[in-house]
Length: 315
Ligand code: SAM
Image 1 (tube, rainbow, N blue to C red):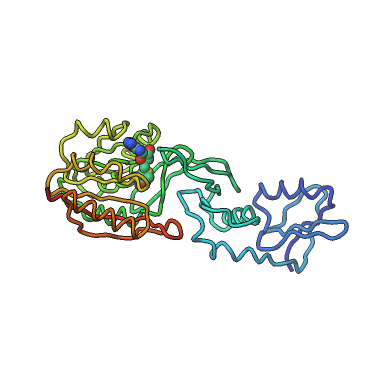
Image 2 (cartoon, helix red, strand yellow):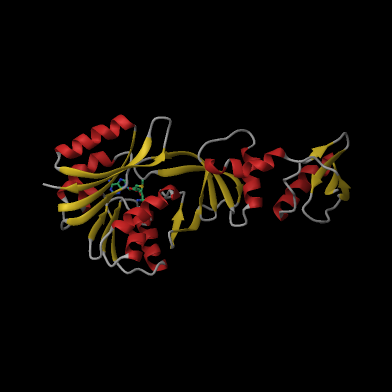
């Protein structure tokens, strides 16, 4: 027998809201009604005005099984889950289920698109508290992010570690589109290096500076809030440049080339299809780069994916 609260239809919405804010509803069962009453499945005995507690067989909520099945359709960033597409009319119930089943998730949002140069996500709250700031942990570092004001994707965690592992002690690195610093912080945590991290979003740079304080770093990071076109020409030539602006990196290749020493490494990212990346690789060869590796980091759309290229500047 499953505990249910039985309330009159008139009282039902008020009681459901109050039980929900208490976290007392058991969403693995359905809320259902007959002619006069609404039956609310409960996790435990709680008392509410006008609600009688009764034991019933109840109706299992099949959607309850979805959180594991739909795991790929949302990302977890600290205490926030973000759906990237509307998976149907039950999305709000699923969002509530995610909060009930994952103790550390406080908010669930729907990503309704990324806009502008700063790549900021437009987000609609589906369940939980409306708070877009969180502390995200990956690869042994902690990052403060504010999803309403800066770009951040947890999907590059493995790639960031791959790049960080390839860095040599003493390198001088330019992180051209640093965001809150996931590449820079990880690399400076692992290596004694000098990094110049640039982003034109003031909030990204202010969070990057906070993240420098939150992590014990071996390396040194200089954070610059500026457009790369203005910031880069004054810098000395780097041993490595990271270009993580995957929809527009191509526009900045000449700028990066000019700031990279001969023999230096370019970690380049682009979202495109297979033909697009083949053409880009031709371009790089024509510009005097040797292609060390090409990887598919993750899928993006039916034909497109994020590619990573490791390149060496030969001439
Ligand atoms: N590397 C970070 C990460 O992995 O989370 C952030 C990558 S995000 C795709 C690109 C970043 O580039 C954004 O934070 C945006 O503000 C910044 N950006 C875009 N155009 C820029 C420019 N011309 N100069 C400097 N920063 C720029």
